[in-house]
Image 1 (tube, rainbow, N blue to C red):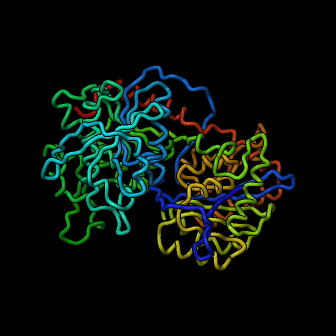
Image 2 (image 1 turned 30 degrees about the horizontal axis):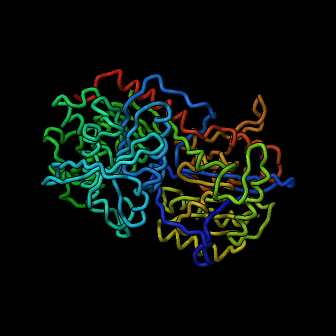
Image 3 (image 1 turned 120 degrees about the horizontal axis):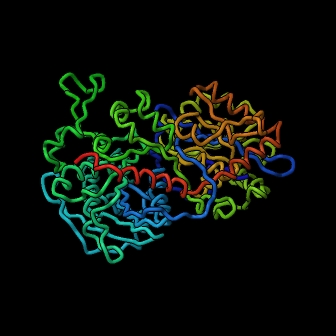
Length: 571
């Protein structure tokens, strides 16, 4: 079974190339936990345990593609989309869901920045210049943007080009932190996204004014505000609707109130974006805490709101999980829904995965054992088919629960296990991973950085973070997760005494404590070692779940239908 985790730099990382990747998904209120344990039974059927993650996702039955009852013109607006530019789960969703909707018969456009910062240049190589350009009135002048286009997988991928998207660094910042002009960069994106359906002749004709705008996170949140404030008053887009999809409520696009005039919006619309920090969050006694909040603007003006799971749609309305927007979101509860994401089974399929040394299926698991042995060899761990292999993949910060893993590690290292971590982030946690590897050379490996091939090989044995609890079950890796948000929605607790026989796909622990986490991990290890048939049942039930996007796409269609039933929320 392959569980590729990170090998610490101090020990000598494997030759696999990697590039740093940050994941911005956030499960409100509590940190996600990701673990996987992998082991092999005596009959060579490999077993893997635990994956805990912060992403909310669901797995669905594989069905034939169904055409939509009503086809629509759909415009996704996003700061990232795979494979063009991705920092985390948002990029995965916006790279896959539009394709699933297009397969069902919709006309779909994705609008995102054309990031030309070094390594990303080649990702836009097939996009051609449309010869269309517009001047956007904002930030004290008129700023020209141009449009590039690629038609791929039945989707129109539209890239907004401007010099502010060309600087070195990652999508949203560099080694010194977030870019100081991100508000400007994504204001341009939102204006351009509103103009694209009106001016771009894609496939011979424009999308027109009856569009469904799907705006993702704060980067795109100015779109429904612009529709309400600058288009509908002049009779444009009266037949359009907008849906806000909240992937990460922690990031809201908050800037000083003095920046509002820069946005080019009418003065009377200030209230839609107005934000006031509580006194305890202000910097000094003279600070009035006044700000503008992009995400709040979308919550106020969008026709429907979607979160990335049913559980998360409830959590964002609570004081603990609402990140200050809970009361506003509660007031719009009637149009708030949760839809669990899917995964791209073309990329995440253990029977075809190009990054695995051996392939396997739910009917023939023998290749999983070989994957695990190859992974142990690659990482320099003792090749032991009998040892459970636990893994973590994700960003190294408190949001991912690394603090809890760090505190629990001395107890875990007393068990006869192996533990692998792959990730980057907080320098303190990176240093801790390296030192832990030095202390437990036969049990622990910590790879600082990110590698797509290695993450796939780890998943063949475990995987935790982002959509990873879904990836894990697809790969026969049994997830152990913190029971919050989409994790609670997608991982069914193991029940060996159910009326119809054993049920469940993993373990979900709550509350978020070291004791509960260790209890769940030890229950999984015990089941793996002492109840082989139960363990195999857990693996096969997980692998039998449907990982496709088609089910999620059908749920989005229902949201679109509801949105068009009423007049635009803000006229």
